[in-house]
Image (cartoon, rainbow, N blue to C red; front, side, top):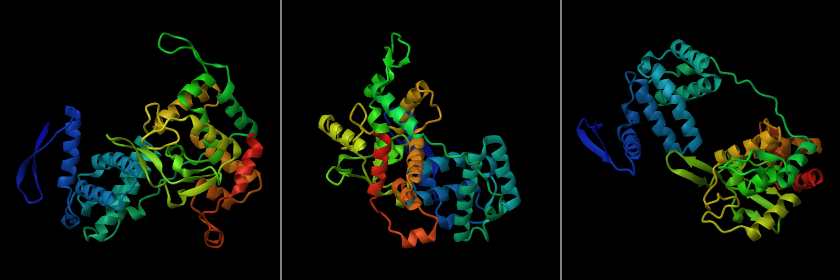
Length: 370
């Protein structure tokens, strides 16, 4: 049991306690409760409020909006730098010059990604302050933008894609040296035991994200229509394990895709032999639970290193599908629908059909992979 005395918003100090299976868990439960209990309401914000209080109000606002778990994790991580760097300033003291200097310091000490996230949450915080009268304008508006260096998209060639799938199925190359803990295994043996081959085939057959593939349910597969519906994804709740979210990364991410024959054959064989699981997912863990994308990525890293393809991540298969679609002469509209990307072109958004099942994608992949 973890206990603490807290002064509530009414000014009264009370004893608060929370339980857990371990001391650390009890402390986490207590910390989470206290954060919610003492979070200032929007009406409490004034120009004299500290940025620590503004962040707490903004965090509560994000939770009310139902922001994705991963987004909240990223924002909370970046907020630690914000609180440490400028948290003690009052809202009225946070000038553009001061915040610009802070963001530049974060960039030089902690990298572009952290600095960009810090700028994003500061902008959101002060946007909230403006809406509730605690600030006359948003000082972050004129803070210098943070530019991320874009790496050129690299995809597998047709021969490389075929070679990867063949290796997962039949390579007799030894993955690791034999020892008392781990017996000698070939790449194909390891992939069979780790249930990695079918996952990679699904990557190649759909171009779906790793979280989307691991969140696929048997009810999402239509064997008669030869399609799969991407309707959700798996995610890890901080301190709460894996969950399946019934929404995709973006609105355009919810889509129905055609299945090429090689992916459909894999799914049909899997349907016959796979044991049931409580989540009805196609690719469960060895214990019948939801599979962690991080664990699958770790397994894939071992294999790609053995194949001398260290640059190939699960996302590389998305880029590969997009490249193959383009090389087969299919339109950018088709590629966007396949990958679940939102469009930036008004012409394509307004005048071309959305949510279309492009069977020509499956035909193209069949010609290439088989």
